[in-house]
Length: 147
Image (cartoon, rainbow, N blue to C red; front, side, top):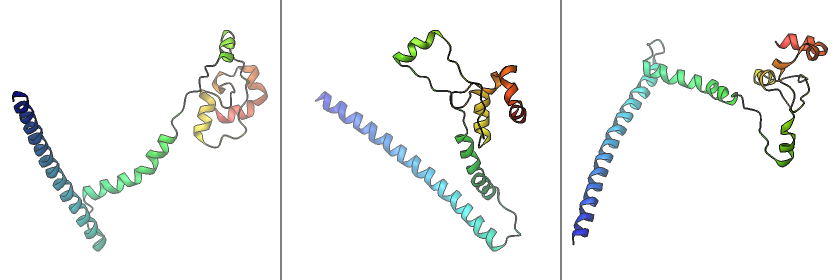
């Protein structure tokens, strides 16, 4: 009987918490709907009379829509670290440093690839920032143009 009463109390507590939660959610939803109605009203008024001053809500909406493509393009250009390979064949070679060639890519297609070539190297080549004088000499024209 005591377990049943404890369960009933906990059930009632959960029920009251849910009711509070849903009331709060309903209140927030009404506030969002009011803001949306204001924005739509401002946009309708703006199209009817373009000489009227824009509201801050409308300006913020259009600014965020303009910034979306640039933000996504910035996310695509996050440099990635070079891959780490852990295999038995490479474990034997850990004693000696890998010999990377000092070559520049023929034509980096964007600034992201050019920066990765400078910092980490492309296609297993040595990073351009680590080229010494002898390695830069044969490709000095391309190297100086990219620096």
